[in-house]
Structure formats: C-alpha cells, structure tokens
Length: 324
Length: 260
Image (cartoon, rainbow over all chains, first blue to last red; front, side, top):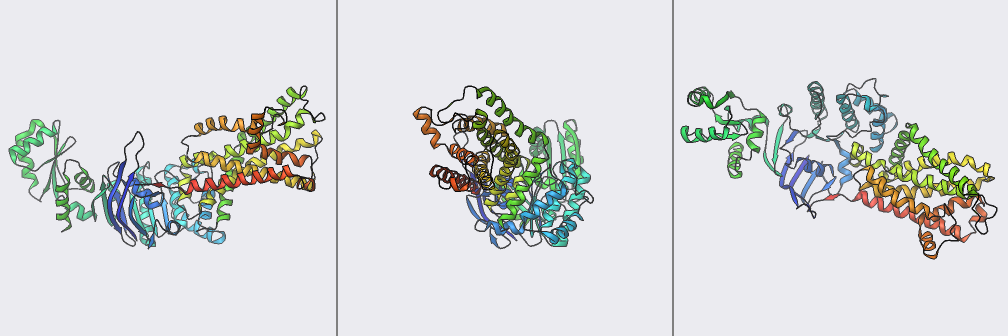
C-alpha cells in the first residue's frame, strides 16, 4: 500500500547553516492492511519522512507510491485516500466538535445525509457522544485527540498516517486511543503507519521500523526484533559504567556494551544468565549499583539498534543474522 | 479533488464564525476608524478648503477614506489568522486534504473580505447624516468597490503572512507598509495640491484607485460612472491588483519545501 524506494532528502543549507541530510536512500514497504510503527531517536528523519508522505515536503530524490498512486505526480489523488493525524492537533479550538467535523467533511466533499451518517458512525468510535456542541478548547487532551480520530474516520481513509498521536496523553487516554485505533484498523482493513517513541505501543503491531540518521536500521515483526538480542540479557548499573565495561571485557572476556550508566550483556541464552550474574556480582560488587536479568523488550531493541556505540558494519552483520 | 467553491465557502464561513464570536474584535475594529473620522473630521474641518471642493466638509471628504481604511485594515489583519492557523495546527489538516490550493487562498480571502465588508457596511449608516444618498445602482457599485478592495488586500495580507513566523512581525511590517499606502491614497487629502513626486507615488498606489471606486458611487450612479474614464481606469487597476495578489498567493501556497 505504501512503497518507498531510494528516498533521499537533504535540507538545503543557508548562510548560517550547512545543508543537512535527513533521509538517505531509504527503502521501505508497508503492505495492505498492515499496522507499522516507525521509530527512531530525535533527529533520525522520522518527521521529515512523515512530511514527505503527507505531501507537504518534496524530497530530493526517490519514489513514493501510496495506494498505487505516485505521491509526487498525483498528490491530490493520494490525499483523497489518506488520513493524517498530526502530533499537534489539527482542529480549530475555538469551534465546536460538530463545526470541526463539518469543516473537515467539506474538505473531502462529504455533505448532507452522508455527512450525518459518517459523522455519527465516527463518533461511535469515540467518547464524544453528546459533545457535538462543545468547544474543542473545553475538552480534555484525550477527548480533543479523539476529535482528530473522528475527523479522519469520517473520510474512511485506506491509509492512515499518525505522528506520535499519543504525545501528552495520560496512560488511560493513551490506552483508549490505541485500543480504538487497533480495532478500527482490523475492522476497516486500514493500512496504518504511526511514528512513536513508546514501545509499549509497538508490541501489538505487525512490524516495527527503526530509523537512525535517515537510514532504516531494522524493519521486522516485534518478535523477530526482540530475538535479535537473544532471549535474555544481563543489565548492570554502575557509577563508572565505562570503566566497569572495560574491565568486564578485559578480565572476563564478555562482549558487553555500555549505554549511559548501564552495562549490557545481550544475547545470553536461557539458563546462562543467572550464573553469569553471580560471577559478575562476586567480582565487581563494590562497583555495581544494581544488576538484573531482563527479557529484552522493544525498547531494548531500540537502544541496541540505535546506540551509537555500535559501528554500522557490526549492525549490518547483526541485521543480516536477524534476517536469516 | 474536492470541488473548489464549497471548500472555499466552508473555510470562509469558519473565518466569519470565529470573528463574530469575538465581540471585542468586532467593537474594536468599528470603533477605531469611527474615532479617527470624528476627531480628524472635527479637527481639520475648519481649515480644509481645497480648490474646487469649497462645498465639501472635511467629515464628508474623509468619509470614504475611513471606509477605505476599514476595508484595508480589516481585510489585511483578518488574513493574519493564517499565522494562527499554522501555529495552532489547523492549517496542516487543510493542506493534507484533497483540495485545490486556490480554495485555501479563496477561503481565507473571502472570509477576511466578508468580515471587512460587514464592519464597513455598519459605517455606511452615517452617510445620510452627511447628506450623501446612495441609489440602488450606486450601492451595488459601492459594494463591488468594497469587495474588490477586500479581495485584493486580504490576498496581499495572505501573501505576506504566509511566510511570517509570528503575528507581531506581521503587525510591524503592516504598520510601516500599509499606513503610508493609505496616507498616500487621497484618503486624508486630495491628490491635486501635492508636490510632483508625491503625486506620482499616489497615482501609482493601488490603494488610491481603490479609494476612487469607493468614493465615486456617493457622487454618481452607474450611468455616470461607467462613462467616466478615470473611474473605469481605477476599476481596472483594482481588479488587476486583486487578480495579481490572488495569483501570487496561490503560487506561494503551491510552493512546497523541496529537498536537494
């Protein structure tokens, strides 16, 4: 449904700023009715990719097809089948819920009885019942977000793009929003591409893409990504993590990685971790603030993949290993 | 792509709805020109005796000038809301919808123009007190003058506001740019007795032509005006100005950020 091929984008420089490459040679495909989360550290090029997919920015090179249409040749055709939920709300806070929905319907040429039917159906997915006349700026953050959802649902998009839609929501509102989104995606067979930093949101999706410095570093199912770093890992917190990591490498021959104040020993197999933990604790107890055995989650995959400590060629090897 | 007219109408209606929900904005935009008119009218009244206008009081002379001021400032400052729309996020939702860029420009411009026209029309109730009477035909011409002025200058406001980061920058630019244009339009003093260089600037100023087509209907019906070469010239200039600003605004909205 979404095909991105060899996409590159460099922001032209100005007198004060040199040119900055945001995306370099990115290739990615999202299948029909797939739910994909796009993640990456700040500055990884996610937002630029999002703007390009929305048709708001023209890339320096490459090709994007959405729903069979070339995005750059036929932007209006793509806009007709696409719904977009931005990170900042795209509603008029001074108008009521109903007025916002009406304007949005007008933009998509939905009128009369068709509008009323679609509006009521979309509202059925939200908790906005009985709030049609309420001004958006009097709604809670969670409900305001639901206005966005109702807006896009009215137009019944084939493809839905969301840019960190749960930012600023409390855990309950976040959960409700995502539950509605997942249910909808399944019922309507929508293709969903959502950027997110929150990995608890990624466990239920079909695939997760991780970007860094404009490149796609990993793109797989959550299970396969987690398998990349083994079934267990030993995580040690230390005041001098770099020093401890160096000693563990030199004295115990362990392939540890240092990330912030943590030393990580990944890819340990079931049963190996506990004896290892005991040996480390015996030798380095005074240096250790905390030590634990963890089952890797997607956040660990993210740290693993995006950590600058890993040279690119090592990553490429790991990715190849994971792919095979 | 969604049909253009309903989209433009819907966006214009939104502008209008937002406007009338802010009574302070309505009161302020009517009160300020009214005070200008009353104070300057009273102040200059005694000394205003230009050649050939001995029978015209300054209140009467300045009256179309104040209307022009209302149209000009209200339409330009209404299009400033494009900056708020962008900051508040509303605009991005419109830009990703399957609508033509012209519909986005027209929505804002027609919304701003209708807001400016409502304010200015409130002011026309003063006309009979000045001894000015508008026939039906003249009223239609006056409204057309308002409409063209509003479209031209709200499109100019749109064009300038589109690339601006903040509303305060827009205000600053508008005050140094717009105020002189209005002052040199003939709104405050007639074009006849000014130095040569100023006359040239005034004649080239599109605001002067807008003033001509707003002032003329108070002194002549359609038959007289359509036979008057200078009225027709000003009408043509105002029309061309509106077309130019609309065209430039559309081109500006069409321009997308491009990578290298």
